[in-house]
Amino acid sequence: MNPLASLFRQSPLRTAVALAVGMIPSLSRGGNPLISTVHSADPSGHIWPGDARLWIYASHDQPGTNTHDTMISYHVFSSADLVNWIDYGVVLHLKDVKWAASHMWAIDAVRWNGTYYLVFCAQEKGTGIFRTGMAVSQQPQGPFTDIGFIKGVDWGQDPALFVDDDGQPYLFWGCGGNCFGVRLAGDLMSVVPGTTVRLTDQLTYVFEGPWVHKYQGRYYLSYPGLPGNKWPEHMYYATANQPLGPYTFQGEYLGAFTGQAGTNHGSILEYRGTWYALYHSAWLSGGNGTCRNLMMDELHYNADGTIRPITPTTSGVAADGAMPGPSHCILLLEAENGEAACGSLLGTRVATERPGYSGAGYVRGFDHPNDAVIVMAQAAKPAPYHLKIRYVAPAGDQENKLLVNYTLIDGPRSDDPGRYDKSITFPKAGQWTELDVGIVNLKEGDNYLKLYSKTGGIEVDYFKLEPVLPAG
Ligand code: FUB
Image (cartoon, rainbow, N blue to C red; front, side, top):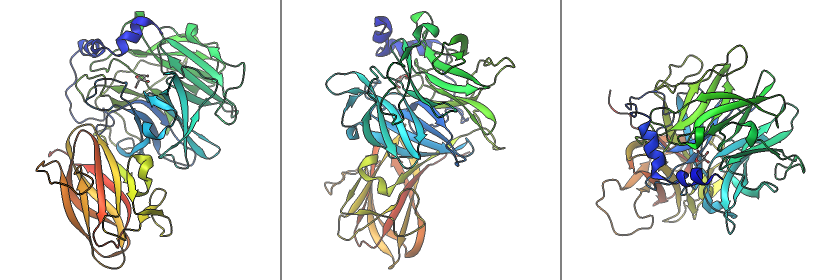
C-alpha cells in the first residue's frame, strides 16, 4: 500500500479535501441520495433471473464513529421502479462471521446454482489481513450465513465477482493502490491455481474497488483512483477483450464532485434497457466521509463504446415511467430473522405452516409472559417512522407489549421521549393483517424493537417502518 495514501485513509484531512471541492448541495428532496434513511456505501447493483427488481448490496457506515474501521454490517435494498425502495435491515453482521475481527468494507453478491452469495471483505482475526468472505442465503434479501473466506486470495479488499457468459466466475479485488483478478473454482471458495493477474499497471491511478461489467462484447473494469496520489477518489475505467485483460485505460467517468465523501466506489449495470452508475457521496451528512449515502445516475456510452462522464444529479433516476425522485425507502424487518439480523427470538420460534407470510417464515409461540421477538433497525438520523406490524390473532383480540429502545428487559422507566413503551391491542384476525401501530421515533444508529407477549395468541410476520415525510 502506498504509505501516504494509507495514512490519509484514516485522516480527517480526507473529509476536509472533500469539503474543499465545493459547497455541499442543498438537501432538497430529490432522488439523490438514493437511500437517505441509513448510511450506506460501496453499492453493488444486481438483477437476478426471474426477478423484476434491482437489488443493491451495500456496506454500512456506523454514525458517530468518524472512521471506516468501525464498519461491521451490511444492508440489502430492492426496488421495482428505482424510486420506492425497501431496506431489509442488517443482513450480515461481524458478530456472525467467526473468522473476522473488523473492517467490513466493500461487498458484492452473486447468484450461483440457485443460492445467493454475499461476497464481502473483512480483516481476519489474528493476522489483520483483509480476506474475501462468503456468506449464503436462499433469498436475495438475506440474512446471510458466513461460510468462511476464499482460499488463495490475500489482501482481498473490495471484492467484485463477475460471471462471464460461458459461466466462468472471476474475482477482482483492490487494496492500497493495487488491483488483481483471478479465475474462481466452481465452489467459489478457491481460486484456479496460476490464474491470478496483477492488473495494477494497466489501470492508471487505481487505488481500490474494482467492478467488471460487459458492454457490446467488451469487458469494462471500473475503479476508484487517486490522481497524482491525491484525495478525493475519482472513478475511472479501462476496457479489455478478456476478463483478466490486458486492459487499456480509457479515462475518468466520474470526477471529484461537490459534497463527495473522499472515497468513491460503485458499480455499473443495465436495468430495463437503461445503463446506470451506482456510487456514494456525503451529501446527507454534510461532507462527513464516514457517513456516506448511496447515489444513482444514468450512464451513457458514445458510439465507440467510451463512457460519457457523469455529473451527480439531485433529481436521480426512475424506471418505467415513474418520475425521478424523491426516492422513498421503507425498512422491512422480518420477524423470523432473529439472531442473523441482530435481533432475537426469546421463547418464540420460526414457523412456516400458515401460508401467505413474506420472507422465509413468521414467528409463533408467544405462549408465556415475556416470550418475545426483537428486531434491529439502523437509521441515519433521529426521525419519526410509521410502524406497521403484520400478524394473525385467530382466537380474538390480544394485548401485547412493544418496547422501542427501552431497556430490553423490564427495568426502571425513562422519561426519554425517544423511548417507547406501549401496550398494543391486536384485533382478532384470522388472516395476515397489518396493524397500524402509529409513530415511533428512531434514533441515529442502532434501534431495537421488542414485541413481547402479555396474553399471547398472536403470530408475527414482519415489522414495517415507513419514514414520516415532511409536510408539503
Ligand atoms: O467503505 C469502506 C471502504 O471505503 C471501501 O472498501 C473502499 O472502496 C472505500 O469506499
